[in-house]
Length: 161
Image 1 (cartoon, rainbow, N blue to C red):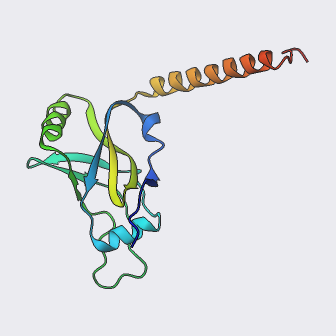
Image 2 (image 1 turned 90 degrees about the vertical axis):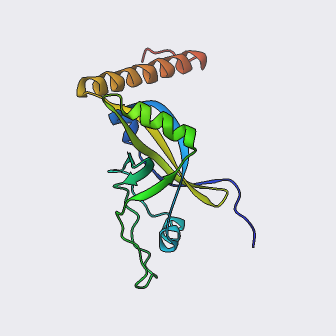
């Protein structure tokens, strides 16, 4: 059997970068049952309501929806169960210290297979206020307009119509 090589994206939390300001990003492994892996290989998962928490010195992922495997039997998994995350002890100590700070939370950004193993990309994030979201959106739009004008001038087209 040929071993998988590379990175295959399963699910991504696109709204996370809009709702949170990302301070730090790191990768960790995830403990899954057999039917969860099969369901993920079909590309089915949702990170929308997911978050991670430290409990009894271990890192847990909660709120992530991995639907039941359609071909599964009575051994099928619960779709929204808590899943243990695998990180190095030093990373865990850093995470415990940073999450004790006020206003910081751990949110999943993406779920993927890396060399055949399920991995999740977690972010240490701070929630944005609604005015921060509007300011970021206006800044992005202004940047796009500037890029359009630069490319228009480089191609020799004038901005006048």
